[in-house]
Image (cartoon, rainbow, N blue to C red; front, side):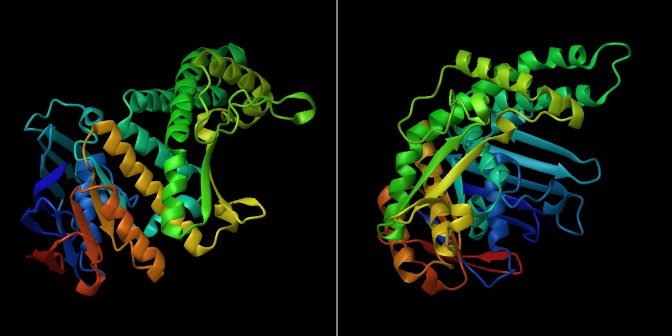
Length: 391
């Protein structure tokens, strides 16, 4: 995929601009707080219709304006023009593809095939399980048919079950009020678990290879720890859907549904007391571990800054490889000063790996021209100051 044109209207500090991108990409040079990351955020907004920095739509609108608008034209096997706007007064979002506003936002997702490499990505490793679940959910929603629909339905049914746990049933017993929501919860929860485990099984080996390459020979791994594990004798876990790593087959959905039903029954007393569902894929973990030579340890708790940063880069490279395979096209790489906090060895190996992995478009932000380090690439240079971009 190639981003050809980008139209900006009052997105953060970027003002009103129209940009034409070279097929190979560009390096955007500028000091901090000039709008480099805002540009990448605007581009990625057309991929996911949300900020990769976790900002709300209202925060993306320029201070003195009520509406922002972004439109991008993408070339590839399926060329498209994707546009999105947000009105802060009405808190309404509008998305169009090729001028049609009848398309659902979920159907418009993923038209750019973009991946963001951000300086904040270390949170993927250092943060809690919810951060890594979000990574999985975004990667799979954009690249796996049916995943987003299952996720949306699961979340809706989960909210309804939790509400039923906390409301007066007007004469109905609590269990009778809650049970109707469990069929849909179990069905979609089993589907999410299977798809997540399939992704880890398929791509875990790629993650390990990327980590080893960037680190210069160290080892790390990802494994999937689903919550759908019933208690066995004496408090042990029966790993019907236990921890899964690379090349491990995903369990059958029928088996997963049985496990989920058993877990809901097992946790009923706790759920009814606390008014919240404590079993299900909303409690899963994507575990990132490092190999010290003597022990395998969670990177979140025991990894150094460099190890966490390398693991985060490996996750993003794995996401890019997923797009490359699932969509049959090179992803657009949005690299936000990703070399800044790496030592020279890791920085050089990452640059070499990016050049080796694919030939897709790269849009790179750096504080100075000397930081543009992509072997085999000849990127055009743009400069940005106070949000204004100049070739």
